[in-house]
Image (cartoon, rainbow, N blue to C red; front, side, top):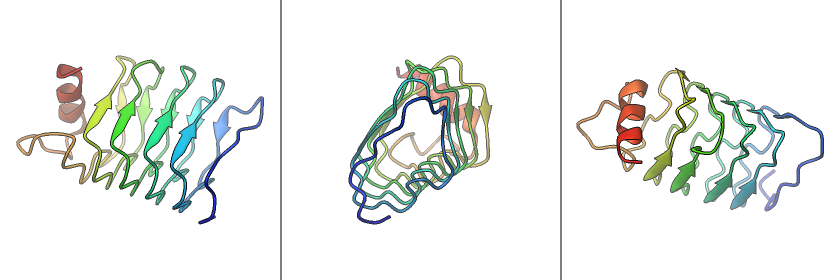
Length: 141
């Protein structure tokens, strides 16, 4: 999987499968098409070169560890989506993540969604407290 540089989605799918692009270290840009409602667990985990993701409005759930260790990811814009759920460790260890826009629809969180995302929130906010992190992110949008 390490040589993957581009992902093409088939028509009529609603879920991007678990571990589908895990450790695709050369993947830089992902454009997830309309119709996808779920990004499965660890789908893009370890994609250390991933810099840009375009999310569809249809998206409602991001699975656990989906973007775990995506250390080049700097911005995430979910504002125009219908995301309700960010499962555990969804953006853990995204050490370059400095901007994230979250929709009002976001209501459910797993454990350590933003663990070690030190550039995303100030040090005085507990990154293990997902609701505090999201409240902060909404306050700066």
